[in-house]
Length: 114
Length: 114
DNA sequence: TTGACATACCTTGTAATACGATGTATTATG
DNA sequence: CATAATACATCGTATTACAAGGTATGTCAA
Image (tube, rainbow over all chains, first blue to last red; front, side):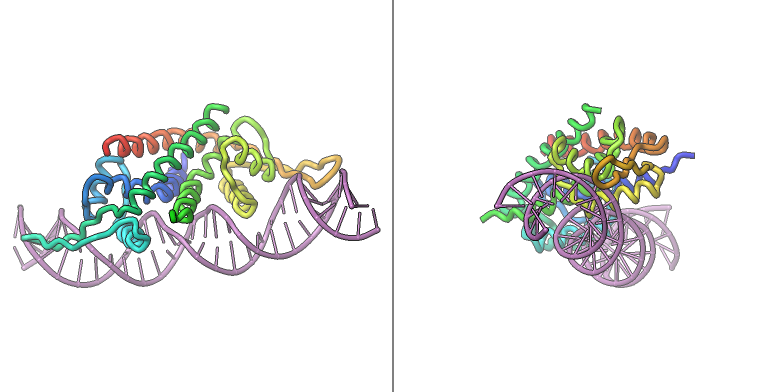
């Protein structure tokens, strides 16, 4: 029997590093709140990210001034904390895009040469 | 002034998850010893991986039966520990290749839709 | 010959962080 | 009225990359 656990553990590892990146991508054009981000990552990229991951991550990025947030009272239900990119966040995202392309083509080169 | 640290910390994060993957790729066709692996990752993929990273990683993968190793005495210098893929390592690598493609195209989809 | 450098292995400590579990509060639904 | 969904948050654990430091051998220039 094939050990699925080893693969999913690996996929979790891969997600790890790229999570900041995909979150910034999602926030590039729209303001989103945490819970929405989780759903969007699932639907648009097939990424299962838990709440215990996303909320500390958003806090971290806010502390690093990559994103900023404001509370929005809803006519009904819980208030939402909407996040958007800061200027610094956009600059960082631009750098990450370059880094991402460089990195994936490195891996692809390795893949081809084998 | 632009904060380079934030990017390089991120790149370190990205490498993290994919490191097992690229190491298995490198071992797909040839036997390599740890020190050689470090040099090869640097030259072929531009990945700076330190010894404190690679040796524990190889031990971990050996414990997981993805790779196996044998000592080879050299006519001169330190003996080398040559690693090669096990059958299980090849199966895992095949799964990882699929996972890698799936994952990168998810990210690319996000990138295009923004 | 001595000291520096390269090769080659390893371990220990630390810091970062993903994730499950758990908790709170509100509203809708069966 | 209980359950589920929405929406936030935190805590503890486990994983792990990496710097720093250690061991050993060989080469080569000063």
